[in-house]
Image (cartoon, rainbow, N blue to C red; front, side):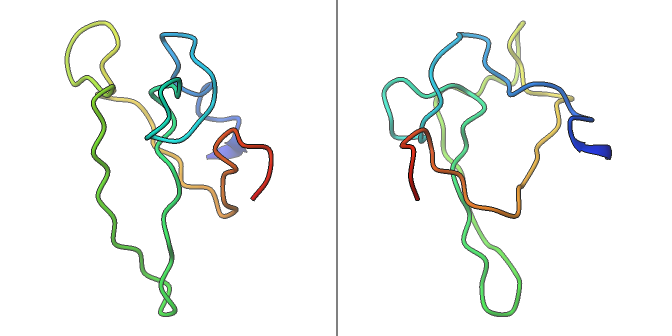
Length: 79
């Protein structure tokens, strides 16, 4: 990425929903939550989401996934 996250495109939000966590009723497709980094610097996670399509006009195929270094407040306004 030549310009950080700005190199990717805006968050994937085809339904124009609010920012939130996976379990929130009104979160958008691009909200995948936080991952926990182990003391050895590795991560192991599984994401299950009913909003992420692999076909059709809102498919996530050929899109970018960005993992930020800082935690996301998931639309709650605090960590």
